[in-house]
Every structure is written in structure tokens, then in C-alpha cells.
Image (cartoon, rainbow, N blue to C red; front, side, top):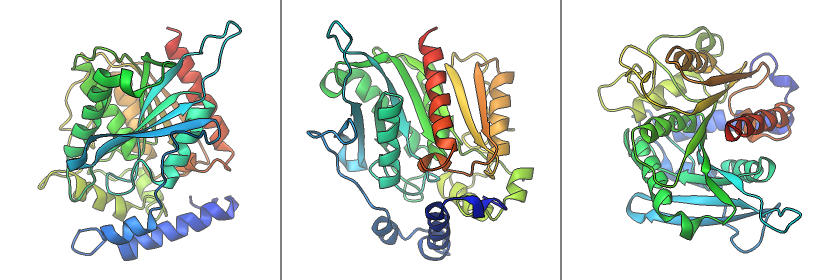
Length: 335
């Protein structure tokens, strides 16, 4: 969002303004902590609807570990049937929400609405994982929570998922920080034995990567209302281990401290980028790094898209985004 911000719908402009002001002046404290009470007050949470479909989708919550607030919400599209009366199988997407590892949850209204749309429009069974947040819980808590949820479903899917959910066509997806998580979940899966889940692809939606270097897009869009540079710096400081910098291997995944992944068997990756996103240069480096490592990877660049555009279905890029994700999934499921 730069010189073109005036062209955006007023609801999007208002949200960006309120979000930026609230985060900078009320939520982020000068001592590096976060006003969690105020943040939770501003972050409207939704309830599941296990018995009544909403827009053709049923939602149910499952708890894995109350002590660390580890749970997930399953979005199940109402099954379709073939002419013979049998149910049409749909893929499964393990989804991780964004917000810099710092705020929001699987039941935050913005992400809840997004998952409803994904479940209905793709269609797919969406498993939205709630993970612990920084700065109270630093790395690697979020990665542990994410993969614990995947392993839990790998063992207990019969009691959790509908009969038309096809775990042999599973994808891991996430936006922003969740896109970072999706990448690392795929790495963990490549090193683990999953008995029921076959990971078919990774969908990285404007993934949150970074490094000590200042890229051209970060400098040009340093005052972006959604991910200004001073805020992303603070998020990395709050999330990474004490004493680490942004060249840590989980943030700068192809940087000076990164591990070689060329021998790992990763599924195909779809990287979604926006031309008004300050993080776009890091996302493109991620794409190039995967290519150099011999991985199958695709890049989609929406020139006029700002960071988190996918949360606003009123934008013209949203239906294009759905079409590109659907096309990627269908291609991977056909191979």
C-alpha cells in the first residue's frame, strides 16, 4: 500500500489505519512486551458451528493440549455426491495463520472468515492450527505446536476428519508468519515418518522471511501500514531466541546460517507475492533458493497486492488468488 492506497475500498483503508495505529501506540510496549489484554479485546473471536453449516461449511474445534492452548479448528465443506451417490473426496489443508508469530489465533474473525472461504471455494477440508505466541513463547514453540498437531491428526484422523477428507492429498499452507511455518512444517515432514498423511504441496502466502540486510522493497515501503519495517524488526526480536539476529536459519532460510535442503524430498511449493508488500524481496529470494536447491516451485506475483490482501474478498486479486491456488492443487493431485 503506497501511492495506490487511495484506490482501495474504504473498509480496507480504515482497517489498515486502525491496525497500524493500535499496534504502534497501544499494543506494542516500549519495553518490548505486548499488551495482551488490549490485543485480545480488539481481536474478535468466533465460535465453531458443528451442527449448522454456514455458507456450506461446518466447523468443529479439537483440543490437543490445554496447558499450551494447542488446538485446531476443522472446516468441512458439505460433501458433494457423484451421480452414483458416492461422496466426492476433497484434499486436506493444514493451515497456519499469520500476524508475525505475535498475535491473533485460529478463531480470530479475519482468519476464520478466510478459512471458510478456502473450504468452500477450493473446496477442501481446512485444519487451522492454533499455536503459542511470542514474546511469551519464543521459537521453537510455534514449530513444535504445528508439527505436534500434524502428528496428532496423522494418528487420530478417523475420529476427527469426515469420510470425504483425503489425507493422501494433503497440503500445508499459511500466510505471512504462517507461510514461514508452512515451509518449516514441510521440512519437518520430510524428515519424519507420517503413516496416514501424504504431503502433496506447500502453499506459502506472502511468507514472513527476513534477514539483517535491508532489501529494496523494505526500504521503499518502510512505512507500510500492515508490515512497516520497525514493526517487523520488533516481531523478529520478540520471536527469535535471545541473542539471535534476523539471519537466524528460521527467518533467513537461504542466508548465511541456513542448512542445505537440496537432499530433502520436499513437495512442490506455491509462493504468493504482492507488489506492494515490503517483504516481497525476501519472498522472491525464497523462491529462488528453492529453485537452486532443485525443488519444484512456482511464483505468482500480484503487482497491486499489499500484505494480507487475501483477507479481503472485495479486492480484485482475491478470485485470482483462489484460481491460482486451486490450479496448483489440482496439478499436484494429478501427478
